[in-house]
Length: 173
Image (cartoon, rainbow, N blue to C red; front, side):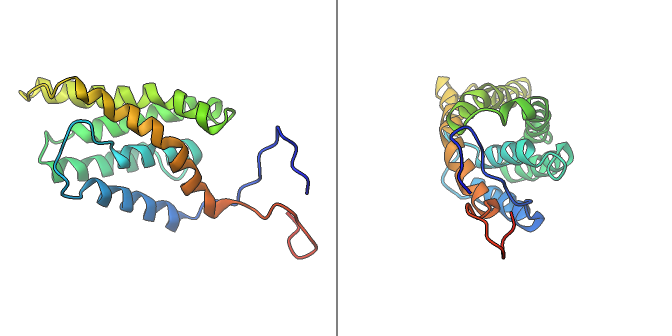
């Protein structure tokens, strides 16, 4: 099959096992004892955002809330801080999901940057309201780093779903 320049390749359905494995892997990556610095990207937020955009019926607000509570317990943060920001991120992703998929991956990164910034902003506001200390302006680097990681995450998470580019009698699609 010859792919025209404007066409996108057909994707296989995403395996629920693969989705859960990537979410758990991102959770474990966030839990690595690297020291909590404000500019470190939130890998779980990035993967939740990706699956909320690409598989909104399988990964939604409830799963984002559950993983947010797990991050709150791990960070011994105000219970609900990460849960609120992940839930809001998943909701905002569902709002722009159809429009976002029309863009190519580098332009998608520009589209998700405000969402990631809003999620980090909500987290920061809740932390400050509960008596936390402002970590400094380096906190703005985290959403930027996550947006820069969006193309890499898109490629890595879509690889298992790619179909064969040239069908034959054994592979009709």
